[in-house]
Image (cartoon, rainbow over all chains, first blue to last red; front, side, top):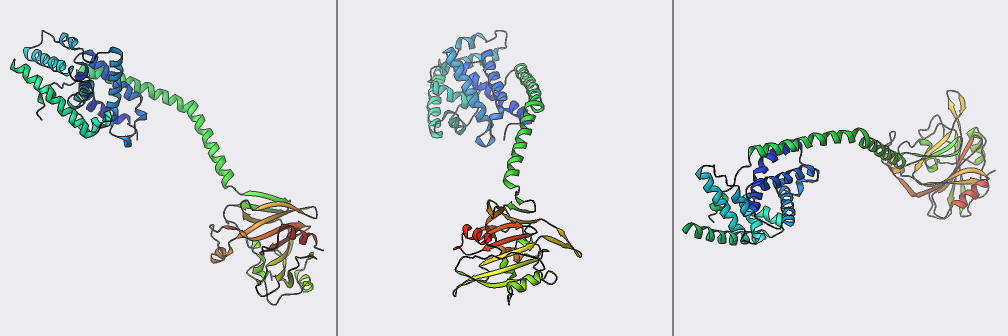
Length: 168
Length: 265
């Protein structure tokens, strides 16, 4: 079965925030995350005829497109996290809470940039897009337990760094 | 695992962005629909029609009966199933009668002139003839007919192992005879055109499984099958008489049947 037009609206509403956050956790806030999200959905719409329901969940298929879009982007730009860009987009006119939130997210992105590419990718799937370990394993062709191990190690590293910063 | 510090930064996309992207994709939906409609009316519709015609042609070629016209009043039709088999196609041994008549008696009773083979394969002995009663027998084809029977000498013989039939192909309608064509339904791929004294004839390898047919008479099922080993038949016409030689003995081959046919006087 293919994704019909009727399905599409529901898929769009459900998956757009997840894909968008996946890219935010990869490239930070700002127009770039929106652009990559848009490219992903446009590609998915054009190639929806190739989606076969029996081969897996639509979200897995959609995120395999997102993964390719991200790979293309990093291949062209050679830079995973435009941290300066993320900071730059913190709007000084925003209320203090928002400014703090932006600052914290920029800090998280900086910590993420210290992880390996694979660790960053898995963190973005898990905590940006909210995918479970099984779906991540399918996307990345890793074993499910392997995904769990890498995520656990990455989160421990991030937490330690995050708490260090808090104590300072 | 406390990972709130990681999940707390999830945000919904800006509504303006979400709306603009949706609109962009929706426009593509419209153009795709138009594109599809264009394909349907032109290339796709034409390709579909051609494919349909090709499929129909293939089905027809594979399933349709094949007509083999021996001459203008004698035909056989090859079919993949026995549907349409008529009583005139029955093997001659269904007309075996006891006591059998002599050939002279058969000629007198039949009411039409027919030839008789002067040569048969030497292991066979002429046993006699039968002339089915068109008015009182259930097994008659509507054509006046005679049947001559030979049997192999010895203990293991079967009535009608070798038979010669003559059908007077004038159909009796009310009290008059009218010219009629004679035809048989046979299995697919069972026929071969040959000649008997330079006249067209058809050699037929096999026969229907009549055990099944007779279980379902008077409305035979469509499911009975052609058995290529059942018999060897030769069919030809001379004037108003159609002849058939029917052999169920594997010692007799096509050349024997043709020689026997050509010896008819």
